[in-house]
Length: 274
Image (cartoon, rainbow, N blue to C red; front, side, top):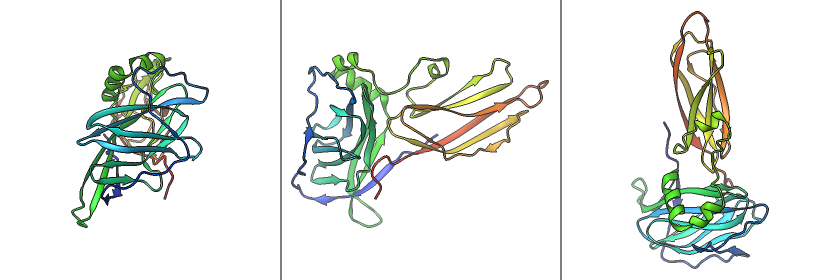
């Protein structure tokens, strides 16, 4: 169970001039050979639009790395890759039809680029229209976790890079990680103890942006030590990170025990705050 994160931005009508930048990194051309340097990864920008977008610009939040500059992306689901220093990158601007999407504080579509990996931005889905409450032009941006879409585009357009570099995501080097559902933005699973008297509850952030747990509730509890109902939350799980959230223990060792749980979460703004 989850809520979709949205960012509301103002729009300026008419085509505006592009932004001047000190240094920029062009996209990787399909078929191009890439040799990453130490401290570099590949930023994978995925967009899903009804119309073409132009003058796409991503910028690092620390202000130290190059901007990632893309002249245009066609309508539909599209993917562009950039070799870039590690760090957090956010959409600075792009043009969509007659509208310019612009983020003054670098808080739009932010994602982490991991060294030696291909890091998925999420599917960026812009829409433009009028805010019914104000009657003014507005922009709504969805950053959606759709790994199957991303991997299909990556395999189709950049098979040599997919073969050369792993995607930033789960490691299956142990039994717990092997249970991870990579199709879920925040996944969860249980690991039973060897004596069958407790379960460890794991949470996994599969995305390249941080997530905060906003709800965790034990339900239908029978014979457990922990109190049923709401559990303490507020923990932030960093990108591509697994945590052991809690242990649920059997109360009376002579009696069967059971429980189930539900949880919810929200995105953490990894960009520069206003």
